[in-house]
Image (tube, rainbow, N blue to C red; front, side):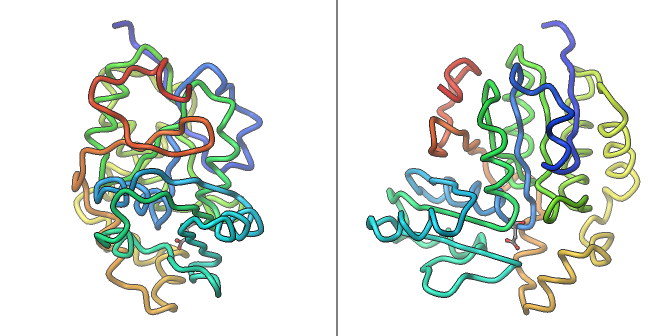
Length: 247
Ligand code: MLT
């Protein structure tokens, strides 16, 4: 297959600068939305309805959906689930549909809907995701969820790791994949330590959330690749091709 193109959008506020309607968009929010989503599907959750607005999530809750809401790292009062991957390992969630809203991750997903396909990336499923992208003819845009429109280290580090994994099959289109790749290669031997300085790790630690951090930074825990089908995230089956994704 010919070499394809890869680009990295460092925050959703820059998305208007990128052509993405003709490509697969990998949405990443390492701490912790896409790590949670990957974990949820690895533990048998049936579907996730990602919504950007809290009010929309509340309405789905009133319709009987299990609902998860996080703002600024904390669970929103009145919702059952927070945004810790460990909460999604609960066997009671097997086969369930869950409405989810987070500070940045679900907004990034909602902004990507016009693409050929939206797939969910995390360190937890990075090799399975890389193998899938290599098997598809589409160009790729990695969309970092960032923090409220600003750059963050952990999502950009993931973008570098995925760009590195795809380097034999994809050419970097702009400077952001290269910067992300250099950053990743510079710190890859100890990303947990490196990220101790990052704003969101410090925020999570202030909230007493420690164990999520190391787990979300661990590569290849799961093979699942969540993708957006209509308004819902579901698990990709092994024989998928991009034109079925996002249908
Ligand atoms: C986000 O949406 O930025 C994160 O998921 C927030 C968090 O879970 O701490």
